[in-house]
Amino acid sequence: MPAERHPDRLPLRRRLVPAVALLLLAPWAAECSWGGFTLTDTPFVILVLAPMYGGAALLIRETARRVGAGWPTIALFAAAFGVIQAGLVDQSLFNPGFLDDTEFADTQAAAAATLVPGLDFSARQAFDYIGNHIALSICAPIVIVESLLRGDRRSRPWLGRPGLTVVTLLYLAGSLLIFSDDEGRKDFLASPAQVGFAVTVAVALIGAGLLIRRRSIDPAVPAPPVVARVPAAAGAPVPAHDSNIPAAPAPHDDIRQPVAAKGRRAPRPVWPGLVVLVAYAGSNLAPGWAGIAVGLVLAAAAATLLVTWSRRAGWGQRHVLAAGTASMLVAAAYAYAVPTYAPATPAAALVGDIAISIVTLTLIGGAAWRLRVTSSTVHAAAS
Image 1: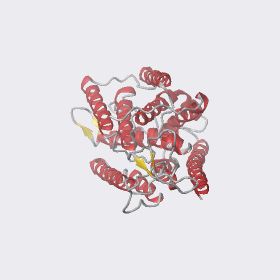
Image 2: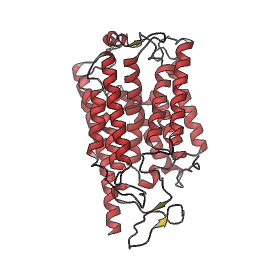
Image 3: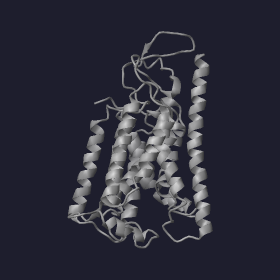
Image 4: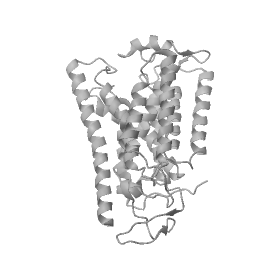
């Protein structure tokens, strides 16, 4: 098991900034980025759901970074969160009437076409709920916030043990609020078999995430013990474990690259983004079980390509940003076509959708600009 990583040795105020940013961004990405609420409702939604969504995103990110894990582990932890959220907290996965009082009530017939016998949940809804929690609730917010930081801070924890304790209590309180509220769980209670199934799947996903933590595709998580260092003046390679001599960031914002990295290079960042975009948008091409099969094939193909490319030289945070935010771009486009949960006037809906587009493009564009500026600074210092 890799040694536990310690938080940044920065003032508490500076370490809290990215944590608070993730705490607030996660609920917006989860419930607002696809058009679920009008612009006037958005601040209240973020405030109420920040403990649950933001707390979960922080716990997943901090746990993964502490054990030296990367994006495969984060994605599996996010899937476990999706199961816990939809199966145990608001229990929307098992409640056939969960959407009856919303503008999505007419989707229940399509959901019933993929009912799983014995457990009485829709496989279509399970695929959508868990997939969106992975892509929007957890991964996209983490990618954006980490991309706005310096490279050496992306792979390190932001919080110490007291901070983790506070976030854990915050998440539990936020989840309890939804579970106990009439508008959260909606007076539905899953059967013991359904609860047992959700717990088993969530535990299995968490266990899988811990098992593969050493096989990270995250460029910010150092794998080899020896790296090439390029200082302002030409020099020889230095050991990465020398804490007194930090390794200089390499091109494309990779913090550490293996000395022996050879072979084919990773494609341009646009390609991982396109792969995820096609997989996310294509998951709803067909109804029923055929649609689920298509979605699973697309997801598996995308994951295979990302893992393959991430092991090539040149893979960096720009690739991670493109892949991690492609689903948010699709969601922002879908916002113009889907209704809000509660009835809204066409004008209010349009204003909200435009605001979503502006926020999404600003977040992704700002993160991309930050990476470009950081990379340009590194190249200038090394020249």
